[in-house]
Length: 204
Image 1 (cartoon, rainbow, N blue to C red):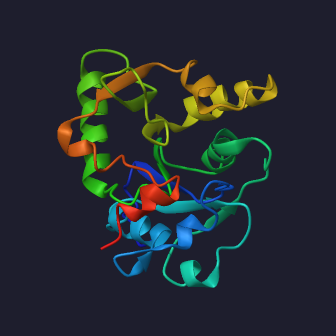
Image 2: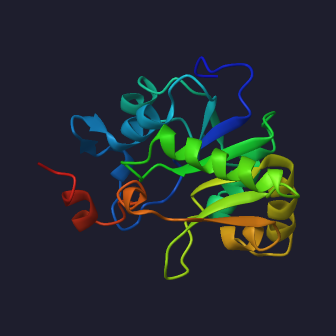
């Protein structure tokens, strides 16, 4: 997948199936000359980790031609990001995966490195975490830019969906979570594009 090392332990799961009701077609909007989703893919995929894309159907040709990664169709169209995560994670062979929302234009591979280091440090002191989730100082978390243990996330996410809970937080609540404090250098990385004003920030 994407020419990544066979020894990779983390798969990048790039989410591209959201309805984007507040900014339709946002993943195709150009940022610095390339579609947003292509930019996110390029910044995250550097040959060290495989990548899969979660979508509701085939990618628009303008995107698919520039994204060298398998596309896994979300078979839980009414279950939001959690359904997509469980669907994709169930197919993975790596012990860890990093979820990346397709509307985070400044997210990059070094951020995954940082979360993996935090995972390793915590694992050395006791039982390994089942999720490393960025957390803001006000208590908010970023579940769609987080690192997860594959078997644990599939199990917890499946249980949540079976009980009618569709929020990613329902999965996280059942996991051993290591909170990763958002640092000043992470604030831009985690800025997402939900509305037209959000997008205009990235325009020249």
